[in-house]
Length: 146
Image 1: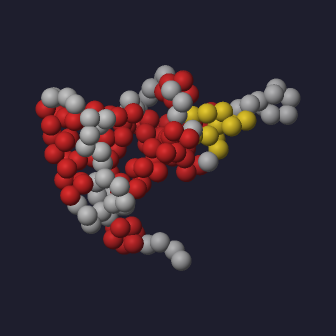
Image 2 (image 1 turned 90 degrees about the horizontal axis):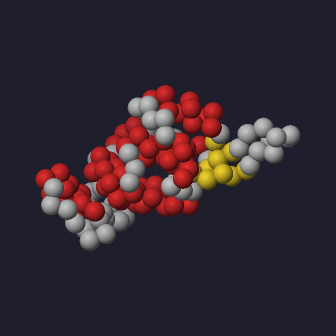
């Protein structure tokens, strides 16, 4: 069975994507482009640094992105190069990254609510942007038609 555009619309999958993405980025110290790139890599499975370079054409330039994602554990080496038969490393997204993306999907589908506890950094700050984010999170959690 093939999915149609109307099937995805009926799921309301992208209805609260912006709020969910902002929550994920804020609580995991990621930039929007980093998260979207990680989602792209998760769909690919295994990738190389060349795939990374091609994948970043649509994003703002960040010279340090690759090293930061590796250092913070969002990307891991799946197979190391050995300079004879394997000419380059092959990478995959880490378990931590897969768990975050799965959690985002569960929230989008309404299987799980966005957290409203002190662990959510939006609920511990008094900045105006955090106050508006708290209201948006409460509205997402109230919406049971996600």
